[in-house]
Length: 76
Image (cartoon, helix red, strand yellow):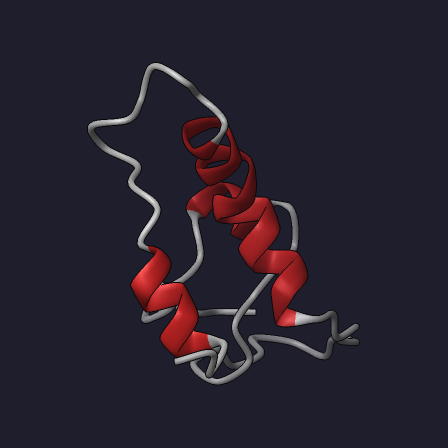
């Protein structure tokens, strides 16, 4: 699948066969298998964000905003 405008997915994931069907098009016949977008997100960002969020020495860069969480959960 040719996807030069797929800026939302890393080169490594493209090489593993992942693609964004919204901006890709086939160069030959192909069969697509869809997966949850969460799978791609986790593969691309999950491990990195989890490492930062769980790093106790990273308080300057990772702050928990309880007010924003309250609004998001409609607890406010």
